[in-house]
Length: 315
Image (cartoon, rainbow, N blue to C red; front, side, top):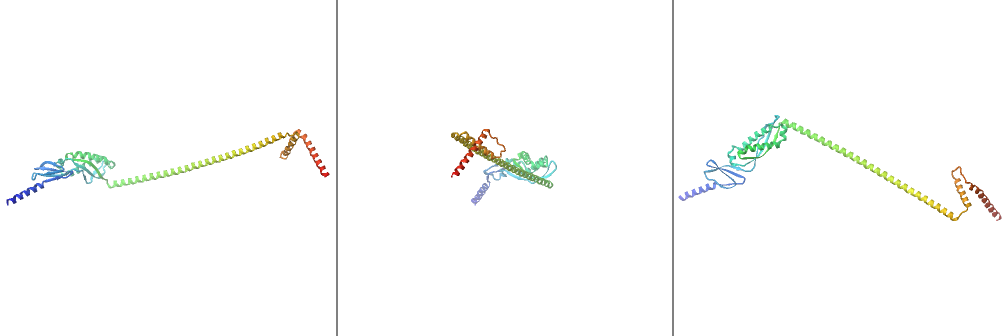
């Protein structure tokens, strides 16, 4: 019987010892209290808790966390009421301060975010609020990070998730955006028509330039052809004149070689005047020496005619 009781006691002790073995996972931390007061912070690894003396007060995640808060009603400097919801990304850096520094730290961050947002938006007008998200985010992060230091919390980022203005403001903004889109469309259409007109004008200009260049080349070619034709004609005339001069010189040379008498020369002169008389000239001036030879030529012609008649009659 005693052995049974001893075995039961040993088993209970072993169960209690095993039950108080704790293994802290990665990126986690345990806050441990001993007899109701803070004792230690356990980090990753194997830990053993003294039964009935120590207890784990809080298990804390050391990873970055995001808290998405409900939309908050804010009023701008120009008295426009709107709804803004925010997302705060934070990380616990001191587990003891996080556990004992503030009751319900997430709710405290939400309330602090709401008041900070109202203060910042109250200094801005509607247009600045809609266009200055980065500035608002930076200011809120700096203020929240400083305010949460005593709680063992580091605020890494603050983002304005949605900015919801009143319905009438939204309608006005939509009309403004529509008007802006129509204005841009008109500008783009005008730019397109302008570019099209410029391109057409440039095309006509290039066509006129090309046509003028073609006409110029045509005139140049015609001038070159006419020039070449005149050159060839002139060369032909010069060659003909040269041939005539050569023939004349050759004739004169042969005449000189034949040593003609004055009578032959006179007869040739008469033949030349005969050809001249056949033309359209109405007046011919005959040198005196040629006139004296005209009678001689007539006598010779008569003598030749008589001799020919006698020969015919004798036959």
